[in-house]
Length: 85
Image 1 (cartoon, helix red, strand yellow):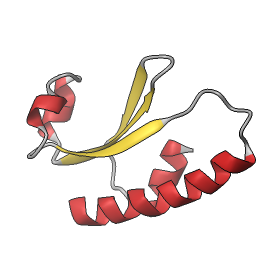
Image 2: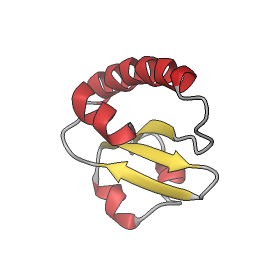
Image 3: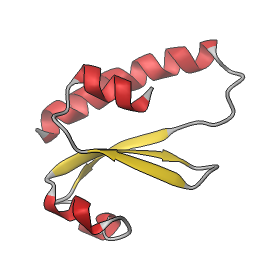
């Protein structure tokens, strides 16, 4: 799942960059990352305990607002794009 997830997140990031250029008036950017719980346990400790049971999940974060959301479903390129967009 992680290797496919990395591919999906990369493909979505390329689309997001092209969209961001078109809508440069948006000041509320979203950062996102695919979190691998087996390799990033210390990072994971900063979040809700419900994520600790997952192998990996997609995390979206709004730095200006200090808010985050996690996508824990079956990750596909389309689902990642909907979640991030």
